[in-house]
Length: 421
Ligand code: UD1
Image (tube, rainbow, N blue to C red; front, side, top):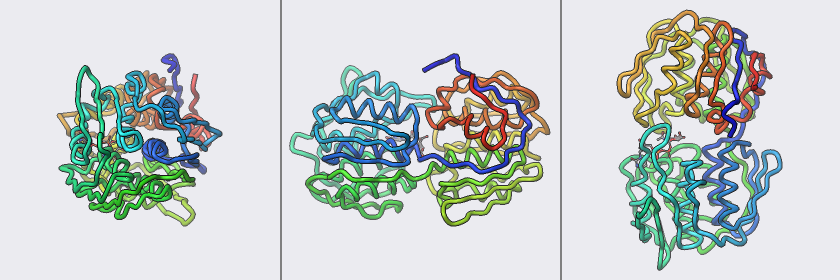
């Protein structure tokens, strides 16, 4: 991680052209975890080239898998899974590593990992993951900052009702249920597209999962999974980020390799703000925004198919130059407005009160020195800087690179004046 890197943005350029959307980070990470369960060599296409995916490969290698990448294809050979521990340094590098719990436990009957602490977004508890795995027969002890999970007589199916449709918990249960003995039912399951992608992939590997994308998911455990080939779905948050970037510059862009149906939680909001959006077959989407954007009705972040928490920050950036006042209520994470104080440095007029943020649109922003403190908040700073008069310098680039494949190259290809130094 190089902390000296900066993005230099000269704002005021209208975005115009065509952009290819990368594969979804939030799908790729659970899919790489699924590879642990699959005997043989699994191949994942459209796997985004991100530091978080590299961290996943290090975890896989540490478990005894062989992992290699060529462009956006990752091959994982899980013939010999010899380890069941995720070391503290890898766990700290990426909190999302918790999604290895279900697969490592399913494959080896044990998983030891350091307790994932809080992160940039707040506390991020894992009680729902643990209680579900306990219901499936796992014995879990928490000592000296480590979680030790064992399934002495193997995992078994269970009827699990989640008190909240947690994405991570649903993923861990699916991974554990795929090869557990008997039948698992998840009630109030998360319905995100990434859940469907994981279930599709597990089913290709031989699992018997039905209902992914709905609130009740059923899985009939099978003896073993066998490796196969899978293509990661397009990243809906990256797509949304580029749409916001185009809208704030009053631009006109076409996204390719996109899944427009996954964007329905926020494209109607963009339309209400004055953007024209069309989706075509073949994963193409068009946005055109010729006039100053209008403030949208109150936005509340919700589980899918609601407005995604991950796109809240890019939208606050967009609304900073809208005509009128926008209100955001963040219901998923308690600490997701850290980018706001940086937007204020650009001249935005925004107040935060607990989980509510009120944005009074201003006519112009002016370039400033900014620091990204987390992934989506960092992308929001880039969006605002694209619209600001003059030059902005954004540090904390490594946060942005956890989720965006070379954001500067992508935006430059559609006319932005942005470079990494
Ligand atoms: C969340 C987002 C997901 C996004 C990801 C990365 C939602 C519902 N989930 O997934 O779309 O891609 O962040 O930014 O928007 N919780 C508990 N106990 C648990 C697990 C979660 O209380 O065991 C709570 C969390 O504190 C949080 C909420 O449930 O308030 C959402 O958590 P969850 O969906 O599990 O988070 P991620 O899987 O990280």
